[in-house]
Image (cartoon, rainbow, N blue to C red):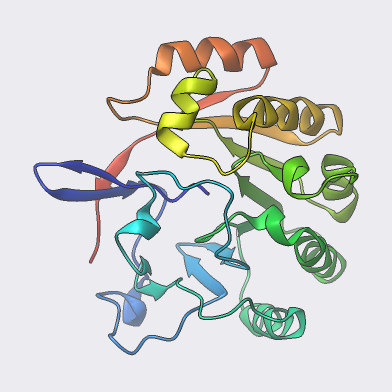
Length: 237
């Protein structure tokens, strides 16, 4: 998950790359807004394929809101592959997207097979559109005995943005409250394997008092990948 929450003087904040829906899609989410598996923000198309996550980050935006940009991301059930594919196909009718991003209110690699199937469809039918995975880096924990990074690369994922909100096991445990043991090391292992598989990998962290960004940067520098600090703007609704 990369959707995050932070409070300053009781104001909600969210990562600044999420912007409100343009034109007639802007404004507050309707109270009867149906949950979405496919949604868009600016020129990017986002896929919210699950609400399952092995982390329970205290700052995660889904703990406090129903969605982002006027879209409801709280899924009632896990969407069937054919339903997501149908929505994805519809979203490409008459539109050219800057990129497609697996990012929503859950960890995408919790549904690895669906992630791979959708990516393969995108690259087959829209080969020029890059596909990015936003992940907490627990793909190998969720999918034991799978070559996760290699499978992602083979399917057509070009970039992985990995969230790391802690500089050691203890700080990661405090911020992200993982359900699995050794979660911090699992993230580092994912980064190494994703880099080795040829993915364009970056590691990001949330700017908040509970995060020692300098110590996280030391860890990331040791992995040999770019480090990005996620800033915030006021929430839209």
